[in-house]
Length: 105
Image (cartoon, rainbow, N blue to C red; front, side, top):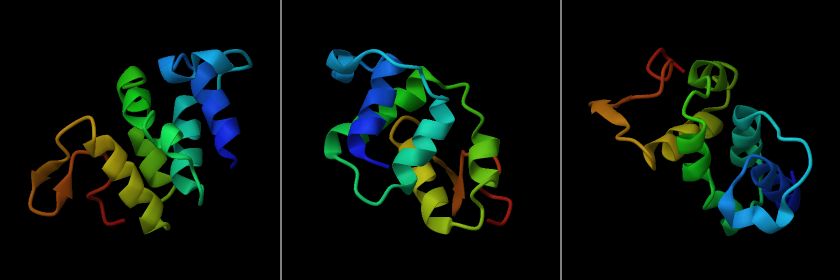
């Protein structure tokens, strides 16, 4: 997905760094997060917004995000990395705080 579309989605969710792009229908935060981590070429300014997205929408359904992408270890790893920028992900050797991640991806 194009970075400008992702930035517009973040703006519609209220991200302060993209205030100038405000307007449009707000996407589901989890769906937007998946779009960002599954896109091949994302601008740094969009990536920098991901910790805000995770903190602002902390009620995101992480079980759904991880379970829906178990077959793609790269996406799951990226979700863990994003989650780790806002929380302490390690809860033991080789284990993570994301629900469902330790269930044999």
